[in-house]
Image 1 (spheres, rainbow, N blue to C red):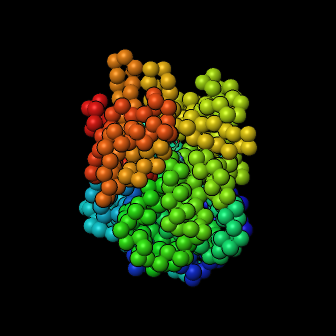
Image 2: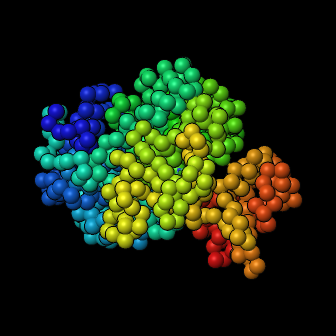
Image 3: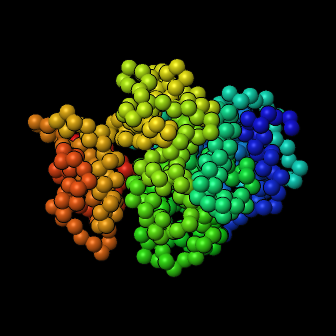
Length: 522
Ligand code: ATP
Ligand code: MG
């Protein structure tokens, strides 16, 4: 091979040898590895020749989870440019921010995003939908796709930037995370290791099943790192199949698992929860499903209990990761997970972790402090944000902003996001702990805990609850239920019930700032 394996191009060239096997499935469309390679290589050449895209230029991709997303992403990286996946949920001003911030030279979008992107004036390539004036259609740009297409010639080294993913914006405005080819290259190995470990610990049969061709159902967007790295690039490398969804829908997911004989589901904890809560859950054949991986948001221990009950003999796993860690950094699965359902597990094969106090000094096991991560998965820094980069990446360690503790055996426990914690009369109340206790109640379908301003105590604990269909519960019931599980000061002083879903971003995270504004008006 001409290119070192740490380059995305090598991954793409290798994937070609999976040939006529189906790589991507979207509704009735099937794209084989060979077709994906040819289309991506062709588009890469067009970007270089017709759009003047050179090494280090940014190309933004703004689409739903279509196979074209993968083609556009692969083409950009193969051309030596930096891929900038934009959040498909973003409104026109948010998309304009992403384009401006990244300084994208070309935009590749679906019809829905294209109308919102056209006003930026940046050259636009459009798939699936109307092509605004001045833009060009994806298929027209591709032109003839020939069998012996070659990738454009570009010199790349492992530390060259490959991607700018925007963080979810849970705690502030989204930051561009600049990831390298090295970051990207380690992810299939990290994910494969985590999966093997989880299945091996769950039993021989599951481990054997995991060794065969894996068909993954992705229930979250490709524009976040879980979708792109834990699902897309990992599947590309391993020769499995990836089933894509326009958007999360539990019934559609059930249907796809049955139809495509899906073996692995990858998404956020709410996806697994809602799948099992669906009225038609029992009507589908889910026997092909062996692993359920989720992460990105706290997974209440109750979730594991429900999976064990409803989907026995599977290997569920909880993965912790950030945009800044190129997806997976720490993971829990198999017997480890059953023994410690409240832990995010052990660091991934290539990752170091530690917990520090506010001065940056490492804390002994068992003490709560800020979780720090180091390894080849940690990104180069934030795009265009030298101050935030200097604050977050200190002496080779990424400061996660998450409070955690590590036990004597090295298992990591997320306590809360530092910014989420409620401080009630000087006592720290970790929202994640109160939420996990609330999930134990059979009538609780979803829960979010927030701080409620209080003159004397500073803050009080408040809970927003979505009641499970066909059940009912009162504030008093809930408080009495929690009294057996939590210290008095952690029990919510206020409880709000709501019928609809809690506001979540596409990464499955509850938008607590929205919730606070909605409920408290602040
Ligand atoms: P922003 O940084 O813009 O505020 P964000 O932190 O939500 O947004 P992401 O990078 O998508 O953006 O999410 C990473 C965060 O998600 C982690 O810092 C952590 O708080 C949370 N998280 C991820 N996986 C888990 C998990 N398995 N359990 C608990 N929390 C998790
Ligand atoms: Mg963050």
